[in-house]
Every structure is written in structure tokens, then in C-alpha cells.
Image (cartoon, rainbow, N blue to C red; front, top):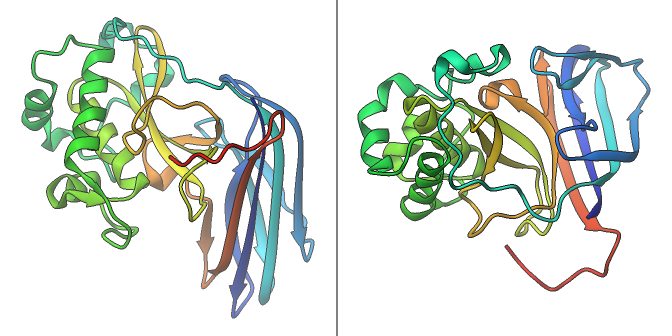
Length: 269
């Protein structure tokens, strides 16, 4: 599947201020960047670096006034995500070093507080992929997708108790419960083809079982491909689209995803 995805962000600030952004996807992990464009107006000489999770990040010093960020990419990605119902749990002592920090509690995913709840939700599911899928299915069944029920400070535990949230919150609950079951889990932010309107960037989680990462998305009724990964992290704090270090505000954002290799179908998620 060949997708074209774009994001336009308008920022405003009453004074000169710094910020970082994570907006560039990269090849690997099941996707290939065919082409891309990254435009900043006015041009402020961004500096790019790679963070501890391997994400491509950009640093800016924004002038007083407004700044427009335009990012566009054409990406080859799978039509379907991989599934492995029989994949076993990878014991902590056998995890690769880079997976270990996705096993411990983090700012929005206090997995040390949900061990008993996670075990009850997993029930008799086999340790490994089956338990991660039991978590995903429980979220889909018990947490309502509802805009306006959470904010930037809402944790996975808050959403678990309130039983409502958006994709970011669904991902936090999944990560939190998986870690409570000794399954490394990480947050993913990117694009999803045919995401129900209004179009926005999307969040889901991945769990490390059977020696690799698998995708889980409780906002969708069935496993769906058509995903472009932009960033990975422990939770939302690591994968923010923009992180301001001053009085910078988002004054508007538009996201678009279209398929290039066949006509668009009239389907909704």
C-alpha cells in the first residue's frame, strides 16, 4: 500500500521561544519512505537529531509571531498488520536491552498500580500475545471513545477509572496493563489510513512478545494496516508532535492521508 500523508501546523508566540518537533517518519520496521518534504516558514534553520528511542526530532527557535510547519511524505506500508495469536511471552531475562525500559512504569502509565486488574482482565489467556490481545479487546469493550473527556495530564489510570477517552488514552491503558503483565509495551504515534473524521494523527500501542513487536489498536474493530509510524516512546510525553519551551501555542492543524496506488473506497473505520 502506498500512502501520501501530510500535516500542516500553524504556531504562534508572543515572543521568541524554542521548541522541538517529531514529524518525520523514517524507513524501517515495515515501512519505506519513498519521498518527503519538510518546509518551515519563515525558515528558522532547524537542527535535527535522533532521540533515545530512535525518533527523528527537530529543534527550532521560533521568532515572535507565527510559524508554519508543512510535512508531507509518500510511504510504502503493509495493507495488514502482523498477528501471532500463539506468540509466547518473552521472559524479562531474555528481553533485548532496548526493550527493558518499556517494561517499567512511566509518567502516564503507572503499571505498578494495576497488576491485579491486569491479571483479572487477562484471565486464562496464555502469557504472551494472547494476553496483550485480551487487554486490547477489554479496552475496546469497556472504554468509550469520547472526545473532550481527557486532557494532556490524563494518565492511563485516570482513563481506566473514568472508562472514556480518545486514542491517546486507549494506548496508555493498553501499555499500562501489558506492563503489569510483564509484557513490554510502547506508544506509537503516526498516520492511519481511513481514520474516521475529523482526520488527525493517531496513537496506538505495540507489545513485545515472541521476540518482536506487534501492533494493537483498541480503537479499531479488527487488525488494520495502512499505518505510517512517526515516533515511538514510553508514553505520550515521549512522542509529542511539538514540545514548546515558552509561550508557544498551536493555532491550527490539518492532517490528510490518501492512498495513491488504488482509488479511494467509501469506507469508514
